[in-house]
Image (cartoon, rainbow, N blue to C red; front, side, top):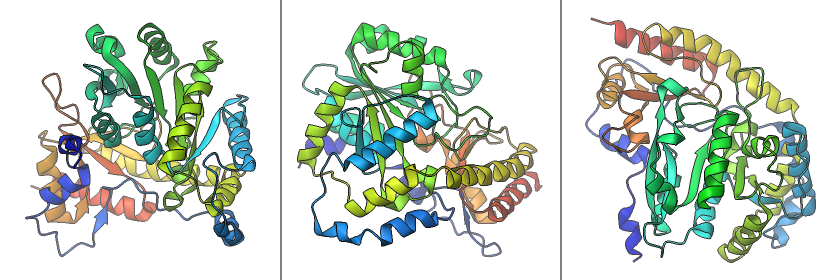
Length: 396
């Protein structure tokens, strides 16, 4: 067996299962889960129609690079969303969801044979970043989010010795679990560091279309362009239809950016067998070409967060995030695991302890004392969960 598998840590939901192993959920309350960030709004009819009308595509092997019409629809979306013109032939590559692509991309760019090979990732973080680093033979450095910086990372505090060995940096903006959006000045810092030390930046932007401010979140390619880096050197952005269009089961997205990196990534994916089904490609074109369902989806989240956040703010240290569909809240008493366990036992509501989404590094775990609540269900169910949480905290 691959000995690097032994370096992997249990996934957060496996740890949650273990935490709840001895808990009997309240029988007086119907179960409500705010634990898993899986979109639960309805899939757009236009996507379902496209799937149903493209079954003939099952009779052919799909190309890893996807059909030209799909790449063009992705390029058109980038133009509408960010005002950028990308070449669909060499700056865009379809992927089977951002999760598998983030992992595969690390295997493409990392050289684990080099002593000290390092991947920098935010902390807390999406655990795929860590697993991708470890299985490529690298080590992970965890850069903590700072509540004083709207939960963004102070990149200036990453030691120079770490940057010297860094081959890949994962960023997530809007962030999971904090919902923070990285400002242009932070991008400028990262690009300067990338130029100095030669590392690649993988920008995870799967939550980019769920936001609560008037101005859409800044994207990595957009930041690069604004700063005069029109070749997107050492930068690849990852986006997905899962959250934008409520199709997590379709496993569809695309990557865009540095031509040279995408050429090598395509080579890797050709051998990895990562071609997207022709049916999914047809449905993806329909989704990328339409914005009306995205606006409606975003409005549902805005209404939901506007109703739930003030209620929870009465008893928790929590505020409306910049984007994404999570609330990142500090809990009374500071024990996130005990809070989650007791909430399930007394009110049958599931939340995810923040410490499960982070690593203890540099003397502390930046997720400890917080919980992540995924407001993915309908508003009424999320409101009911919030009311139970208020009662749970306020009861004698």
